[in-house]
Length: 202
Image 1: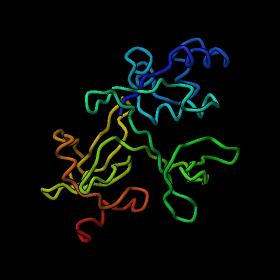
Image 2 (image 1 turned 120 degrees about the vertical axis):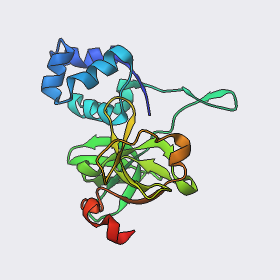
Image 3 (image 1 turned 180 degrees about the vertical axis):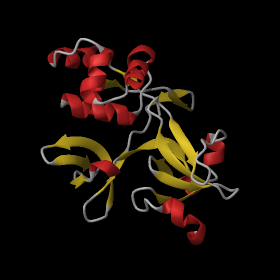
């Protein structure tokens, strides 16, 4: 899912921290320099990249982006759905908007309930749908119609990587149509050892 960066706000935030160049921003934030150059020069970045920038600058994600109206429906431009998920310490998955809090990362659910989540489990909706119109999130594990298992990760360049768990190779045929026939069978946070056990489970 691509977003449009608010370049003016990014430069303002950099100036407030005394950062003059993208290279210096990369060193201090820990974000790959190539990813940052893609954001500044090509207007391409992932939601996770903007979450990391917002965390570094201490601001909201919305401050660093301009709403993306690139998706069309019925001839009209529609705003892309932005949805995060994260896992609480009790093991519950919650969905909503993400924000930084004094104790870590919160997800504000749409019923105005805020839950603190484990930062490592935070992922964003990819914009793709699986079988039965289920949302595909970063970290999900998909089973294709041909029996392959794909791990969904953020490429860092405004799109998503679908890696074959068995071979470790990037799936080059992951079209929207193909993904819509896949089944979500697990995710890497609930089952980090999936690669060792999936043959026996499925």
